[in-house]
Amino acid sequence: MMKKKSCNTSLALGAVSLLTAALCAAAPATKRPNILYIVTDDQAPYDLKVYDKNSPLETPVIDRLAAEGMVIDGAHQMGAWCAGVCTPSRHMIMSGRTVWHVPDKPKQGRNPLEKDPKHVPADLANHTMAAVFNAAGYDTMRTCKKGNSYAAANKKFTVVHDATKRGGTDETGSAWHAKQVLNYLNQREATKDEDPFLIYFGFSHPHDVRDGKPALLAKYGAVNHKDKNSLPPANPKQPKLPKGYLPKHPFDNTDINVRDEIAASGVWRNRDERTIRNELGREYACSENIDIQIGAVLEKLKQMGELENTYIVYTSDHGMAIGRHGLQGKQNLYEHTFRVPYIVKGPGIKPGTRATGNIYHLDALATLCDLAGIEAPKTSEGISFVPVLEGKKDTVRDVLYGAYSGGDKPGMRCVKKGDWKLIRYESNASGVNETQLFNLAENPDELVAEHHDPKVIALTGNTPSPKQLNLAKDPAYADKLKEMEQLLLAEMRNHSDPYRFSNQPDDALPAIEEPKIRKPWLKEDKKKSKAGKKNKSSNP
Image (cartoon, rainbow, N blue to C red):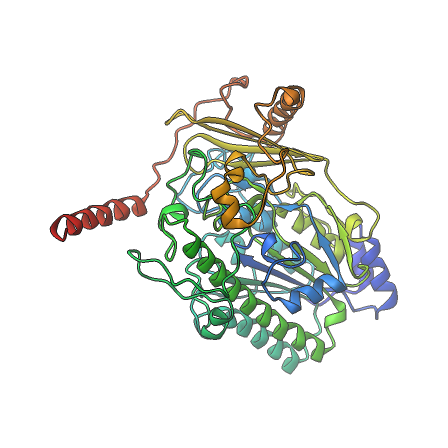
């Protein structure tokens, strides 16, 4: 193990932020900041009261983090080239690189650019989060779900305890991940380890299967529903339908039969009120349990005298639909999925502050390095948002680009600037070709014509205003549509996007040989569908 470096040595490693400089000035020469990076699996920002004050989800620990730190309203994941959106998301977190510049899991090949070293450096794993912090004298530890992440980068952590824990007990659920962190901290305490630490504290929930603990399920009126041929029971304690709820997405979004949309246990293809409200209850039960586990770790840090010297980041790998827009999963680019919760607390961050930020997950590495006084690796394409944390800036970007290409190609793309957002959908296989244009200031939930249906209004209790619509076909916004389409093309070029839409120049891009993607959930779905029909015919 490397000897710890003093603040002076830390400063010599690269340009240091004012936050770290202030910390070093006030602390002993050997006291560098710790980092606790907390990431959940599949959590929409709107689940939390800090993003939706009407949310019934109770997370007092996360609320306290927000009150003692900064909430970033414009945090995003850049997207995915596969249905398992968490895979590229976690690669971006670890490497600080953009979506088309990170590798896939071994032997998958779903990012068509990954074999080109101009886009994905062959030795990238050696320049990822743990490798960089190890080299700077930090002790590194991680616990998280197993799989759908950057395995080569994960191995760089000195201590690794990964397992997928989505059960409803302490041993099979989120408490298991907290236990790994608590054991690690207890060991540090016992050995009087004074090296600064970076802990990657990941959870397997609230990703499905959302098997919550019984008491928390009861609190939110939910059950761990397992029977595909029946609906879960109605319960007045269940969360209300989200404002953006629809019984069906208005059109094929180029990956409408992805596993999350048709085979997630407890929901399957169902989008009725009872199913969605029960699933939200399960989501909230799992999320409140995560809050409890975070509280236990923070209490331990406090007892050790390390809490005030620790930067804490709370986020999720991506958002989640669960009934919004008639969708269930994360294979879309609506705000409930493109955005992520992001809270940062630590030395020098003014309590109770908010900022737009306009950050991506890939900015985490550059920012954590900045906070620790470490030079970010040359491979990083992220932007340090320490100036936002310092209150010097509100944003680090004017434009945000998003991509989803896990189904039919080219798939979905979005671009945001100011109050405006464009989403494009196109499938070379089915002929789908759709455009959405939203003014997010007037229509933050990206409501469309179907949300104005009286039946939907009766279910959600939300009556949209006349302007809360997709404005793409409104002649009054033709100039804005053209402007946003040009901006989307520019961002696709800027981010090495290997695809183009039919209304864009082809830029002489080389042909792409697409990998064959196995979809076992479709076969299983067809098998069960045939069995159901047979049973109905034999039992009229």
